[in-house]
Length: 341
Image 1 (cartoon, rainbow, N blue to C red):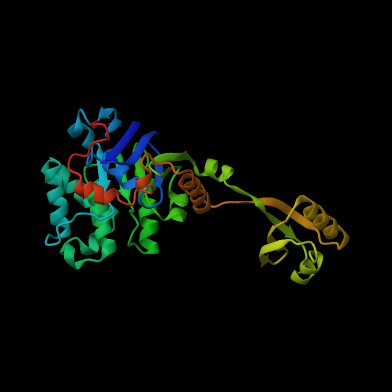
Image 2: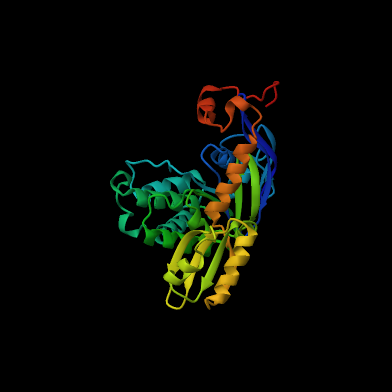
């Protein structure tokens, strides 16, 4: 389990993360999404102990990360977006080295190495030097290293970057196998892939947690009130004759074997009533009429655009947190305005 309790992080005058609270339970695969500069990477770095929070508390398997960092990190496996590897080492040498750093006994280390190499599809390159393998295989080495000590909490930042479609399916299958008894957090920009993988989504925008819910819950709130979907039995020519003079904007028409699927935006309610009347008069049977559901990408865009429009930043000059990384490099004290941590 992972728990964030009112976590904030400042970089000089810039508040990169603001009062974020959530819980990740065992057996869950959770997606973390947000636009560039929204605070995702800072959140992951605080969760994995690379950065201390300015305010709030983080618990990993009930261990406070600030008070008992070693005990908390023993339960954590982390794969950053740009996996730090030793290019001069062979794949098996690097994994053995990682196991030693984690304090794993020799026999346990060997067994887990063999398991991780097999499950991450590294058998063909296990003896090769890391600098000589592809980017996709390097991603797999990073994933194998994160899994080596059998962690209860797994944090993956862009785990499928650089992988081909077959490799992505393999990673998806592996995550499903790892799910029981583990907490898995995935940060990714590939939203359609997250829809297939995660149970729940955390949306971070402007440093705040703007949404926390399952895919189904976000889909229910994600409908386009202006756009309607119709399915009728008829031809495209009949449809165009039917809507002539109504001022209806047809967004998309898809001809299927037994019906016509139409996406449209009526200018007002009266035009919609007239359309339904014409469909009855011209004997074009209406099979279905629904409001268009937004995809996860569209829901995400809607939420983040609303937050940007609201201007949710403490320091207006730092809106969008575009200078967050620069502040991280230049600010050595990392203090909150007013002298706080």
